Image (tube, rainbow, N blue to C red):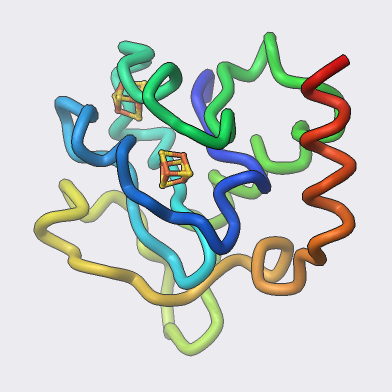
Length: 123
Ligand code: SF4
Ligand code: SF4
């Protein structure tokens, strides 16, 4: 799963990345967006358009963002709060619409954590 979205997207969600994705594999939670690892074709088009620098390819991500590699996967593989089963591969975010819920990591993410990640990215 090379590309994923980390904490700087939380509570921003301007959706610039969705406009760039050729396979519509970026899904909308409640506080952030998530890349479907089974649908992403690893083209990299989304990474440079994110104004928050929230999108990474896994081998280039700072250590502070690494938890979000598995967390993007969990958004699709695990049952989300309020849902009976996993989301899986819905075939595109335009088909699924807004999912409107988050993984526990994103749902409980605090602003101070976000600031420390942004500072780490500046180093
Ligand atoms: S790397 Fe390409 S296919 Fe994957 S989420 Fe970004 S724009 Fe979409
Ligand atoms: S462009 Fe960046 S901040 Fe905006 S929704 Fe996509 S990942 Fe989030």
